[in-house]
Length: 208
Image (cartoon, one colour):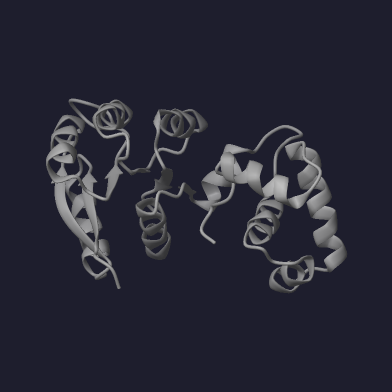
């Protein structure tokens, strides 16, 4: 195993920081190198500590999460920042991703999902929770259903139609139908293009 992933935790609620310490401190893959209770201190510590991944809340005093992220990325374009928040409005999500966040997670995400997200972020890979992925592209004729996102995620891992069918307990014909709908919604003609578009839009994760 390589060196532990160095984390900076940024949240104005002490109980959340304690919770994150408990979650990540119990796994040897991670080490918390610093904590900040506001965005301004986050900018300072990010520059001093150069953490591998920054877990950043959105709503904070002095300097909010997006403003802090912009300052951090201006100084360190290579910084890897995950938003960890209770706010899940489409406006908040898009604003954070547009500002340069590698991922967007909710504070009630399962422990394993948090671990996975931080590992992916440390590798420079974008990550969204499945619930966020589905909601971000929900609404209108172009919406991918949760099942379509599942099919596309498995296709992105190189699984065959038969393999996807077995994993999801559906028929191979149903998988083909889902793929046809996905192609139409994403404006592509094959699975490779669909996967590429989905990765670019953060609908699925590039964690193969």
